[in-house]
Every structure is written in C-alpha cells, then in structure tokens.
Length: 601
Image (tube, rainbow, N blue to C red; front, side):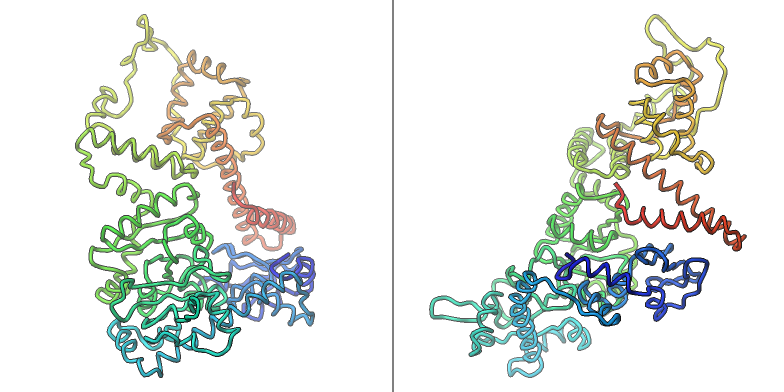
C-alpha cells in the first residue's frame, strides 16, 4: 500500500505517464540520444545536468548537479509542494483515471477528518479574533512591539485567543465540541467546559500538507507558563512535526539546509528578514525522535541556541543524542549566539547578512564535541587532560560513522598529548626514529644490513587505510577483492592500498601470522609500508575492523565508478556520435540509478 492508494495502481499510473512531456511543461528539454536534458528545476545552474530517462522502466529523472531524483509523482510533489496522495490524485486526473481507495484506511482517515476540520475551525476563529474581537488590541500591540509584519502574521496564520472561558467551547455544535475536546482545545470536567487557550497569541502548527494539527499559545498576561502547546492527539505527534517547515517550503523550492531554532517567533522573525530555512522542533528539540525527523528532512542541519546556560545544555544534549545516529555524509553544526541574544533579537539588531555569516561560520560537530567535553577544564593541567580523555572516549564508543570517529580520535590525541611528546618521538624531532636509534633484545639491529632501499609509500587517506587494516588482519581477503579495484583510476592517496594488495597476492600471504613474519624479516617492505596506518589514530576491535574495511571498499568502488562515469561523459562530449560510448553511458547510467536508489551501507 502507498498511503490509502494500492501500490499496484501507483505502478500502473506511472506506466501511463509520459514523464518527458510532464517535465517539459516546466523545463526546456532537449533530446540527447536516449535521454532528455535540461537545466535542473531544483537548483540554479548554467549548463544542463538534469536528465530524463523516458524509456527506462520506470521512467525517472536525475540531476547530476544536485542529486534530485525520482519519478513523475516525485516531480509533482517537489515542484508543487504536495503530499504523496495529492500528487497521485493530480497525476490520475491528468491521465483520466479514478484513484481507488483502501476501505479500512479510508475509514480511519474519515474518523480523523472531523479532527482536522475542528482544528481548522479553531485556527480560523483565532485569526478572525485577531482582526475583529473587542480585545484584539492587546494582541495587535504585542505583534507591533515585536516587529512582526502583517504579511508574516498572515503567512504563519497567527491568531488570538481572547480572555474568555468559552470562546470556542460556547458552540452549540456537539460534534464540533467533541472533536475540540479530543484535541484538548476544549476541556470538559464534569458539568464544566472551558477553553484551554485564553488570552494568548496563537501560533498554528501545521503538517507538511499545510493542515493545522495543533497550536502553541504565548501568554499576553501574567500566566505562570509563558508558552503552552496542544497535547498530543490522533493527528498531532510532536516528535514528527517541525514548526515552520510547511511555510519554509512555500517560500523556498529547495531547502538544502535547515536552521533549527528554539521558538516560534525566532522562526517568523528570521523569515521576515529573508532567512526562510529556519524551523523549530516541537517540545524538546534535542530528543532522539526529533533529531531523526530532522535528519530525514535535511542532512545539513545548523542548531542555533541562545548563549545562556539553558542554551548550552540544550546544545550538549543535542550533541549526545546525535552521536549514535550520525552518518558520514551528514553535516551538523552548532551556532551559539552571544549571551542575552536569540535569533529574533540578533537578526533585528545585526541584520540578515550578519546572521547568515554566523550560520556559515557555525561550529562543526567535530569541533563542538571537544568544546562541550572540555568546557570548564584547563587543559594545561595534566589531570584535566585525563578527564577529557576519559569523557571523550566514553562518548566516542557510540559513534558508528568511521570517518568522523577516526577524526575525533585523532583530535583527542592532539589535545591530550603531553607538550613534551615531540621530545619522545626520536632524536630527529620529526616523529620518526633514525635508523639505529632502537635496538631490540641482544642488540639486534637493522643498522648494518645492506638492503635495497625504496621510498616509503605515501600515507593513504582514511578510507584506503581502513581497507588496508582489514587486509592486515585478514590477508586472505586480498584474493576476494582483487578484481573489484580499478588500478588505472586510483588516486595518489589511495595507491597504498593497491601496493599492499599487490604485495599480499604476489607473496601469497593468507594469514596474519605469515604477514607479521614476512614484515619482521624483510626491512625493505617495512620501509615501504611504514606509513600504511598513519592516518588512523585509533585501531578498532576485530569486528569493527572488518565492518569498516568492507564499508571502505564500498566507498572506493563508488568513487571508481563515478570517475569512470565522468570519463565516459567527457569522452562523449568530445565524440558525441560514438555509438559505443553512448551504449556504455546508458549502461552506466542505469547502474548509477541503482546505486543511488540503494542506501549506502
């Protein structure tokens, strides 16, 4: 099932659509071989990188510039900001077919419809009260004092709940009262009935379809609670809602980054100054469910917190909850504003450009990690370095992203290393022992051996180094992967892997014991591979080593494929009539689509 719509119908509908014709209504497409090309509608570009594969099954589009990818339903969803079901409805209407519905699911939605209607009714009543209720002056004056424009108030649907017990609950419509009671907008106790929100500025909370599903209310009096929010209901689950996301999508077609702030007015004020990609999480912005929802919405997140103790505590909580769910490829940063400032006051005092500059220079997660861990510690004191090391290593255990984990271990070693470490690195001061500086038992030394010399292989990047570590632990893996690496397009910082692999195969080394023996008796190979693991600051357990090596190999294979694909693309631009190149390009394009559709492990 796809929502209320049978999947078999969705598949049939997609097969009826001429995707190129659909997209050509918005994009100027030109036929190029078996595909259509044009400038991407999802990002600004000068040369076309948007391809429509109309003859594939199913037909799909892909932009090699921004990564936008999908079928006809995805295209309608993204360009017209519709839900899945709404996009299917529109596509079905275009094809002249009726959308079938699942009866059980339809019944559930029918039950919720009264709740959506009641919530919409309340939102309209609050908006009308802001414009015409006798008590409206207090709310209008507050908005004026906060500098919220009429346009922003209309866009975000701001309203006013008057200071009266039965503004909503005074209705004689029992079905409406029942729905409002389910939403807890109306409270019923024995024979008494009254409104939850009284004398408050009202902020409707909308889902991704723009439907009002809950409210936040800011007191206009002296209530103990400055803000109160609707409790959860059948149509409102706060961990799955981002305040301002629907409005942000209305203002910007492509949200490549989300700025997460703490308050409704922060979102609205930033939007008023042109920063339209700000949202606020409901409840605690830093719990695991909220964070998961955020990362599913965008993989570039900037958390913006006030510079007070509560803001720092919220930032630290977000960091701790993020670590186990962070994946390499995500970009998460922290922006801590000066103490006494919040996004609303900052953007009004300093302007949008100054705020954007702060966002651009926000502290990456990898740096904020150590800011949080070392807060209050004087690292010139040895004991404090020990405290930092213990705290950080405990936190690092939960990280599953190998690149981030390696980088954090490397930085931890730099921060906790003794200032006299360099003196213990060898007499040459460069971190390497001179030949003959170390002697083993019984004076054994390689100093006088006359062995052939060869420059050490350059330090590999971390991805290649982790694959080398997998081979080091299990040399028999070399035969398995030998045919998967493309030696011709290997880059300099990956060559150590190919050299190490060639040596293992040439010497027929299949066990770790054999490998250690060969290295022990062959100073020539010792010199060649002395830098093999220099980019790794932490050696993992056996299971992590194997998993990391497999993941690194997959990353390398994807890189090799992309380089080959780019080369074919360049060759085609030089020789556009070459049929063999066109065939290779089509084959590799299909493979690339499959790789894009398959989540990276």
